[in-house]
Length: 81
Image (cartoon, rainbow, N blue to C red; front, side, top):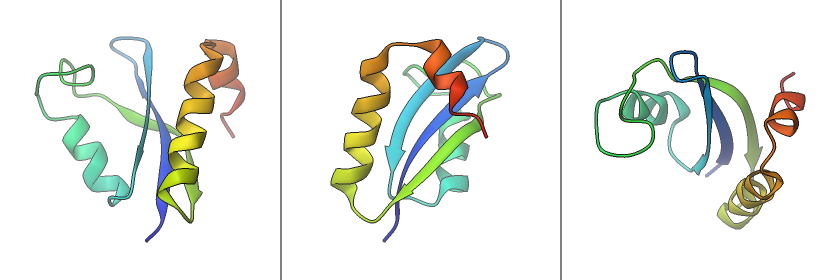
């Protein structure tokens, strides 16, 4: 199984969301865009801004924590390729 660390962006909220998953990326995005309780549940315009793939769950979670620890919008925006 391939694991992914991803960054979503919402135009409506002008915010980023950082997460990781072992799921199919399209299915995961669909779930983020359905109205539910939680950070991404209020709007349904989330799109993938950046995705990285890993062989293990531990590596994906480690990268997620690394990105979150930067607490920097500039850093996140520098990842766009």
